[in-house]
Image: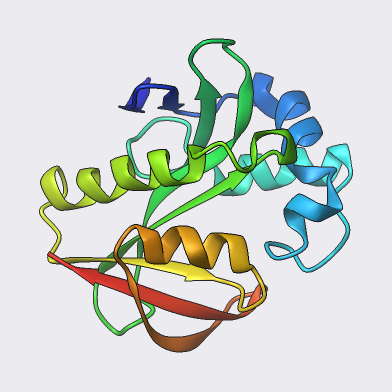
Length: 168
C-alpha cells in the first residue's frame, strides 16, 4: 500500500521481501546505522527481526519502505510513528537513507511529505523528530524543515535523543 508519494519518492508498507534490499542499503552499513543503533551494523537475521518487529506491514503509521520512483529501487526507510516522549500523544517522523542516496535532497523531500501527512491527515497540533546529537546531517535537515530543538529524552534501547518540534 502506498502511504506517501512525492515527485521522486514513494513510501509504502514494508514486506519481508524488502529484507535483502534494506539490509544492503541500510542495516549492513556502519555509516548509515551508527546513529540509529549505536553499532557497526546488523547481520541479515537481525535485520529480518528488526523489520518484523518495527516496520509497518498494513497501516499508514509506522516505519515503512522508501523507494526511488525513477529506478524502483529501495533506498531506505521512513515513517510516521505515534509516540509519547513528552507525556502526551504525539507523532514523530523519521528517515534512514542508504549512503548512496545521501546529499540528493531525499531526506528533505520525504520529511516535508511526512510533516504534511501528520498535519493534514492526522490533524496533529505538532510534530516531533528525534535525532542523535552527533547526526549533524539529519539535524540540518530537521532544522531546514522548520523544527526547533526542544529537549533531550532517553529512549528505550537507543540512548538519548534530541527532540525537535514544529507547531502547526
